Amino acid sequence: MKFFVDTADIGEIRDLAETGLIDGVTTNPSLVLKANRPYPTILKEICEVVPGPVSAEVAATDLDGMLKEGRTLAKIASNIVIKVPLTWDGLKACRVFRSEGTMVNVTLCFSANQALLAAKAGASFISPFIGRLDDIHLDGMELIQEIRTIYDNYPDFETEILAASIRTPLHVKQAAMIGSDVATCPAAVIKSLVNHPLTDKGLAQFVADWKKTGQSI
Image (cartoon, rainbow, N blue to C red; front, side):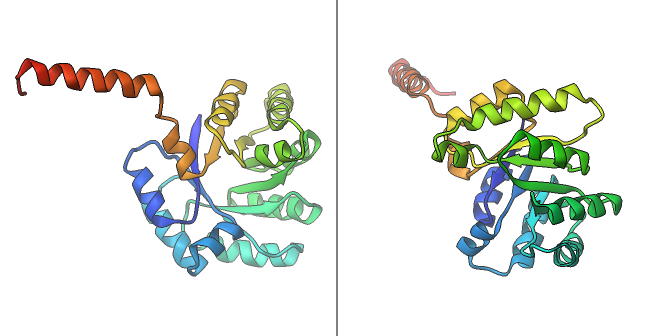
């Protein structure tokens, strides 16, 4: 499974990129607001650090606006993925961008039928929001499973499932077990995946025992 980091913080991205474990980046207006810097500058810096897909979301909600903004964003770097909402105009924009050779991430997916339409429109990625479904007492992972089943039924679909709105390490594990192609996570969630109390306990024991040997390497 590919790991994308969900942030517009270039410091976080650089830190994770050094591990070699990050395959891409996703951004959205809320993350840009938090970063409080010009969006083109943020995207340019991210694309210089991460060679993989970098999702840049349009702000417009109408077709003409999406096309104008998306084409502007796509000029920033060759690895920019235009992010559009799962609306009729978003699907139309997806089809146009794909015909122009630009990757597209269709976001705010909350149903399998929506994911089916996105694949038909040629989306490069579909972003089902796990955490937001959990927030309203639905099973976000059930949606991932439904989309995986539908896409596997139709091998001609090339759309990758990008599990989004991931809140916990459990979400990551479940998405991987179902077969999500990508998980996009906050930096804190990605870093927490390495943690286990028995790892800490075992390492502490090894360090203590090595000290008792009086040796050095």
